[in-house]
Image 1 (cartoon, rainbow, N blue to C red):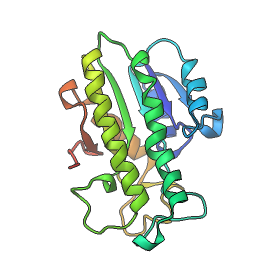
Image 2: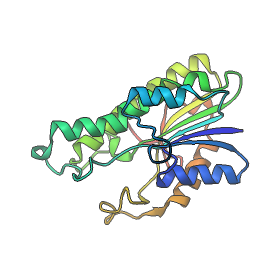
Image 3: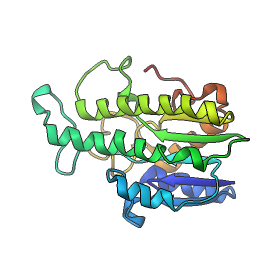
Image 4: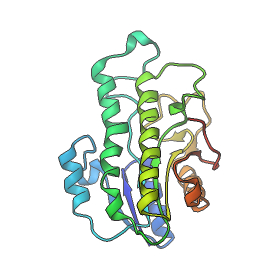
Length: 220
C-alpha cells in the first residue's frame, strides 16, 4: 500500500508518515522544509506533484498556518489586514486546492482510496460561538467547501474513494504552543493514531464529510 503525505515535516504529518511506515506502508513524504514544496506557488505544486507516478491508496494533506509569522489570529474586526488574510487563505485553502487538483490521476479507480485534509473545528460556521480568528476561521471554512466539492467530483470517477476534512483536536506542536492554554492538548503521536483510526472506518458513503478525531461529524 502506498501513501502520499503532504506537509510531512510538521508535527501531525511527520507522525502520520511514521505510523504508516511502521504499519508497512510505502510512504512518499513532501514538505516545504525537506523538499521545497511551496503550496502557495502553483509552479512548485505542479513540479513536485507532477513528477509522482503510480497510484496512492492514501493521500494525507497536512499543511496550514494560524497566522503569518510575526502576527497572531485576529481577536477583533479591527485587527484584520488584507495582507495577513490573503497569506492565511493562500496556505490554508488555495494551497490544498492546488494539491487536490493533481489527486484524481494519483488514485486507483477500481478500489478504495482515501484523501484526508487537515481542517479545524473553528472552520465550522455552525459551531462558531465566540467569534474572532477571522482569517483562520474563514480559510478553514473555505477549505471545507473545497474538500466537499472534491469528494463529489471524485465520487463520479473513483467510486471507491473517500475524501474528507478532519479536525485533529488541539495538538501539542510548535504550531499551537501560543494558543492552546485553554484547551486540552494531545501529543502529535496520539492525534495521528486517532485520525488514522477514523480513516480506517470511513466508507465511500461518508465521503465529503467533516469529522473530528473521534469520528464524530462536525456541522458545516
